[in-house]
Length: 474
Image 1 (spheres, rainbow, N blue to C red):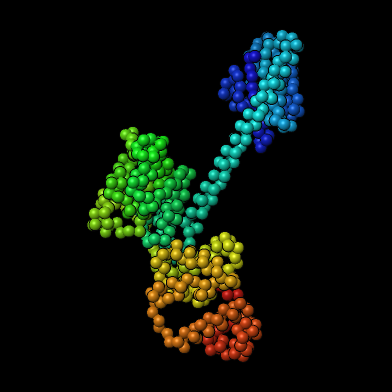
Image 2 (cartoon, helix red, strand yellow):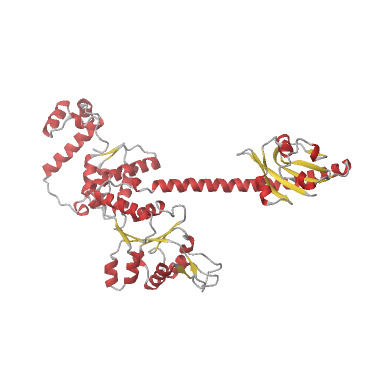
């Protein structure tokens, strides 16, 4: 045998290419392709039957794409090609050429090739399935990555207030650089969301985004998590293990709650920032890392420096590009759009159909001081969506913490009569919204007469346009 090839059919592209060969160069393998029915190889794959060419120079079907005929000079060369069958499916072709001797020898070679083909068919099919599965995973990974990138665009972060527009501008400005970013803000303001937005809009967006909560791990584990460890470095270290910095190589590492790091770990982090290199726990090898570092904290690092809990030199290394996320009590115009977003989210999750928020509930949302910020607001909406019996979120669907004067930071400023009138007005508005301004229907719901409805509409100076075609959160 001078040449031998295994050619496989790609059913997605409908193209036949050489998978492996004997005595062909990689370049010959790469450039040699067929369509089903093209040449001897294509004909075998299309028909599922073997073909024997006694003299390749005299066969118009033999295309000699690999240059076999030219390489043999004047010798009479035969070509034998058999299908690779998996069940009833032809998945490829197995072929060889040799100097012609006699027809009996060719028949023996044909039988041998058929046996080899049947032996490798199962393995070839298994490999194809593995390749196809890996490609599906790569495609799915790419699709999810693009979805992540789209979802973390600043345009998709909810916030129309001026303070949030300023934050979005900072995100846009810093994303395309490799500058170290320090995100500051109270718990629940969305610092991690901003970190994601910076990464997925950066030049590193197709590389890893690795996050770690520095407050979630004990000091005995944090060093190993960040920098990795060598086998035998400590009890339980059974194998070598990469740390988060190595896993993030080429991409971004997000260190949340950076103010919780111990002084010993702060020193090691300072080295990473200065030298861009690490050493695993229990190892001495210096490992270079190329990472973009984003950190976040809800602490005043300046106060921690005064208390000697945080290194001043590390602070200045981290505070290259600070971004401050305001609490939602300072951007109250964003509260209702956030509510709408979370209602849509938890409607889908719980199979509900909440369409709007009552006026009374809106007052509670906008008067509450939200110590837990967006996270607390989301939890509140999730609860309200679950327990609401109709398609409206009312004040009584909200947690008690929103309904007390102490929790909202407000004081009781109305008399009992004023409070009763406020409740009556809200009930009247909500009922007329439900009935689209139909006073007779509203009277039946409330158990009073249509005339009494009219009297109260006049008393509270309510207009019909207020109930018909109103905004869903009015």
